[in-house]
View 1 (cartoon, rainbow, N blue to C red):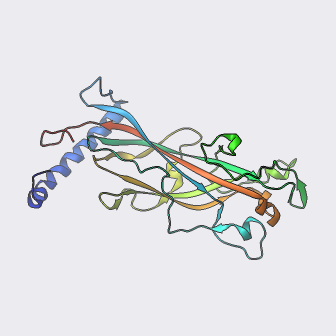
View 2: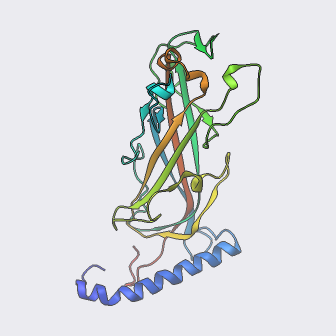
View 3: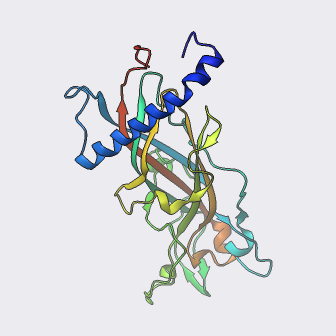
Length: 271
């Protein structure tokens, strides 16, 4: 809308909203028919695209402190419900010459878990653990620099695993979170605030359908705000000595998958 004044913009607003509604209807029809043609095969000028956001390192966090407890229940830091984690690199940006049609998404978690001392006492029994006194490296650091992590599949509350042969199988590590997708340019949340992390979980490696046809217009910056509600390991950390001997870092990866659309501005110029 370069060269137009604010009154002309307000006059054009209903028409632009009507056009956007029609574009979303067309997106829905294309999705029902199947994957759209790529930019070099069809005039629709669409190509597959994805935004990948990494968060971390995230320490162990508890929802409350139990004064009479031990280990994690007493020593873990409390979550800050008002401060979100942001992507470590950058927010998703559509660019000035394209829009992004968001189709589906998924979240994966990666766990770094190291020990400074061994053995540790778990439920009254000494348990030998591998020791590496070096601080934890980054998610993408080499293993010999104490980097890297393993995939963490459990995002729900801890559950009992009836494996009586080892106290290490008492329960599973888990991470719980909420997410808010905030449109920076327009100053609004496209999820209408925080939503449970389950809406972004497609399972082990599958993607989950997004909230219907969703178009991110050109020059859109989406800020995916992640609010951690708990990060807890197993009952191995139920004693003060075990908790103080361990070091833990969790990373989240949220991937938004869809298509970039190269469309023309109503004025005739590409935007």
